Image (cartoon, rainbow, N blue to C red):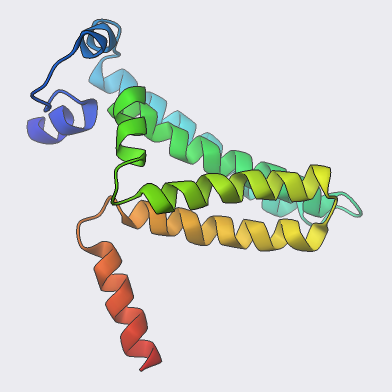
Length: 160
């Protein structure tokens, strides 16, 4: 369990720079990090569920859904910042193994909000919300060893 705490809190790295020392000096305790993670993750789930409920509001429902669903997903991803710290989270998001997934998630977030507010296209907003879910799932699978390979093999076996 201590090894897991060290890895998630960023204390397992060997090369310590000046920025790492600043982050460590102002970092939260492990219990505070877990509480922050839980609060942010629950807020994300509540936003996503609220967006789903608001989907049925006449005329503006799909726009509200797109906004709350996107905010919920952003909060859910942001919750891991409490466990790893902001710098390690950013480094891990843009590692070569998950770079494309990260770009797709961020692009889907932006396109969902653009289609709701700028283009005023409900169909595109709904499509981008679906793509957002798929991209976020693929991104999340990148943190589980061999999960992407298992999903690929499962789909190829189902389609063959």
